[in-house]
Length: 312
Image 1 (cartoon, one colour):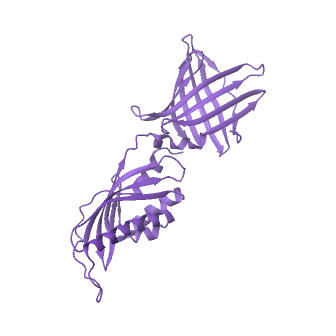
Image 2: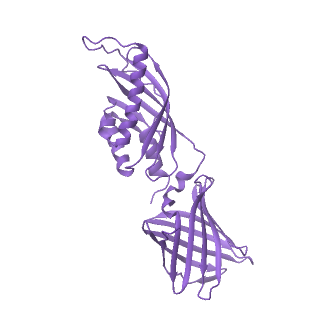
Image 3: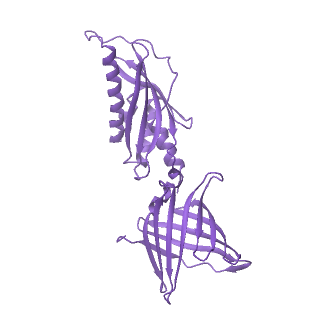
């Protein structure tokens, strides 16, 4: 499982751009014979049209057509400093992105276009990417150096700068599948869990209730989010009796694992490793292992299959 990294860096890195100083190709290109020279206003309109064509082509998921909007030796530099040189590299970058995000959509806001000569122009704007997962959109400031080649405006160099949306969703976007209501019943013990986004999708709130065979209930609240200081996903658990715990999360194959340390209401230390292993969109396995209460080891819990409750 991957969080922040592959999805977000590729999404922002392959789509949008900022600034350029590549003027080696800015020599004038003559208009085809018999074709009248366009006015400055018409040239600017043509460049804006090219920008809109880029977004339309992106939304069709056509990597080859996107690459052809660059000059043959065009350059793209993403916000991590990774450079794609030439149409072949640019096409492959987009193809990889579309394979991972087949329904992602892009909106462009062209803020300014300025002619640098008869055959060069500079465009600035903002790009808003709506991910295929339905999560929070990301925004980038971009700029493009356009070069006119045989009467057609093409992109010669593109760079981007990611704009911080103020949400840390990107770090925990891989928990999107957990959102919803879940139920399990094992040996007469019923477990219910409801997960929802809070704080502009910066945190997942999980409220859970366990009902024993005698009807007694125990409840709790867990908040999962990004710890920027420590650089990891973290959880905070709170029980009505005053017990609490903190977990450090890490992705594992098909799920997540949390190393949890806590304290009971009487001050006794607790520890456990919690595993959530996704089976499909509607089921996952929960288990607590490596448990202890003070100096006393406790047995591992049974594996519990949580199933999505479609009625909630």
